[in-house]
Image (cartoon, rainbow, N blue to C red; front, side):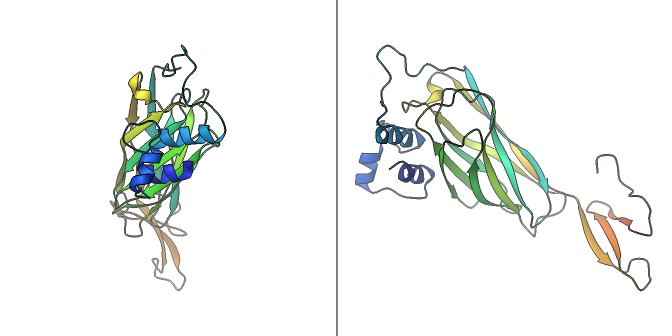
Length: 239
């Protein structure tokens, strides 16, 4: 079962001896998205070996770069961060681990995009990482863009102005015959980050009257502006 293989690939499920023997379709000693691809192809009657003389591991692109996106948000906010691919051709599976700062972020999920809408996907969340495995029965044919989206909640205790790196610590792309793309192509990763916005908004009687005012605070310098008292924000053009 392809979904079962993806669960084993992310570590959500520890396989029995029998499952390990049955699920390692390409015989490389591990169960990952490559095996999920082959299981899918077997299920729909597609060949699991390339046509004779076709050179099944021949790649349509000489290199692949996975890029974690950049995002900003406030404490308690849920955000999505794209993991993009610069050339979506010649592969039909991916196994990716993203590390992050768990004092700032909590991972909550991983989702396909319009580019990968035909893929099955599974994820497993650890103390400071999220593993994602995804597979399809046929290679993507081209294009570029967001391959998947990771979902995080910014912790309520996250310090304003702090930032968590999003580090692509493990990555593997697999072709439709279970081959490792890195056998003949370069697969690299570019890290991203999530930054906690350095301002907060609070209501209190800052002006000394009977009515509450809206105050905006910058973590680095304290009070920034009060609505109705200061007519402009004392910030820079980047705020």
